Length: 391
Ligand SMILES: *Cc1c(COP(=O)(O)O)cnc(C)c1O
Image (cartoon, rainbow, N blue to C red; front, side, top):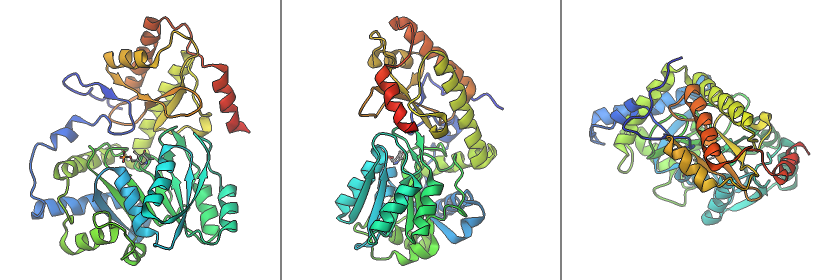
């Protein structure tokens, strides 16, 4: 495989789950202005929608793609507000910050919500979903987080989908940090709607997100939305009629995204992208484990997106110092988001390959040496915490 060029002008690699390190060509695609109304830009919008649908494979004909200005959370809010009727009720499956944010969004919307909060990282399982749905006929929708980026866990969406459809309910998916790198089989997971954004696995720059939803569901969602700017039906209807976005589109981000989609296709689409991220993860995790670091999650739950490591027990370890030492060597890592034990995260996504990951591990070793940390082994309490996964 090609050795990826490092970011230019001394930029550090972003080992963060978005914004992330983008290709030079993607940045270069932004060096031109586009008129949002002009036919050239309308063709770009049409191409973007068609290419994203293409990533769904054969099922694409039943779905449509609606891009929307804003960050990923805007799209989550738009999806919940547009597809859940005002008298609907959502079972939100949370095991981290993004699930909790979705539940909070339901509060803002003033629509009914049942929150299953599994804590920092335990996966919501199909049987639990089935039991909750059997007990509460008012629930109309289930919201699943595909990869919960706050721990890096890849949630079991297939068994969640099975339980949801067996109970005759609809499935909404926040696949923000997974779409484009983790395959989703629409035959097994026939979701009503799914959201993702430009600056995650497709490796574009921030500025917009997109909803993939069943055509008949989009058509039926008219009048549900609480918000003018977040109304998926209105955005779709206008785009279908005019080829334009309703309000000022992020033209440069769209141009960059089209370049990113081209590079995604060249790499072999979802399979190719997923394979590179998986190698990134495997090389990085093996190297970090050799230094004594331990992952929060057992291998079966590790996503190829981002990995959480426990902070070492050694009192000489100081995360702020570690962060600065990593940055000085060209790598931006990510603080952890666990509530019980201290941790940090290393992303595997963005324009980088396993050779870069080998250097990440070498940088971590050098940082530990500088701090005088002999072993990166975590405290006993962290390993106790991890036992919960096996229970
Ligand atoms: C990135 C992300 C979001 C959206 O976050 P924004 O900061 O609004 O872009 C939502 N859900 C998940 C799982 C994410 O990884």
